[in-house]
Length: 279
Image (cartoon, rainbow, N blue to C red; front, side, top):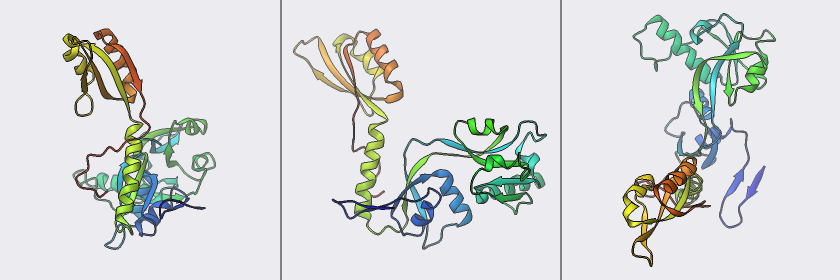
């Protein structure tokens, strides 16, 4: 599916997550949203060249999961190294082959750099879906698959014995974008939206005599904003606070002596610490 943006020369193309690194890496699409696992798999199968390649530019702070080695709960395999030479089913053949190749290299030479990969003797079987069923059906001795909560794997009678990689959603760009200024504008807007939803704006009134203690609780991103009130003994303070900490911070401020403590949630921002303008 394709959607055209009315106020910018942008076409939104809806693709499977696994395909997005290919389109971006080959320069057919300028920006894409996919998982780190898909990027690693793409680069394991198709290393970048001078004409291809992609770059992660923004961590989108959601979609967290792990690519794990899983085996049946009653199996004798206790460690990923125990599976060397056995059958492994996965939707990530590139990453799996590299992972077990590195394990085999270390077994042959414990002093070898774990990043130096050799050809794996482990039998890697590609499955497009239902990977968790392959052990029960006798297709594999173990699997490598994405795990979020782990409920699906536990229901299939599997347990994790190793983590191949951790993943979450990221914004990527082509190394050869067709329109760098427009790419910068869109990336900056996404960056600002992500930042706005990581923080709350905490505002409160505090006696000047307690200001030092209060600002230790709310140091802000760079520094808190402090404004005088009509009452010379009081000031108003506003500071950015991480969303996950805001409730505890508000309690600490109340205990410190702050009054009229409010939590304001920003909808958007333009927040970046990048040198220059290019993403």
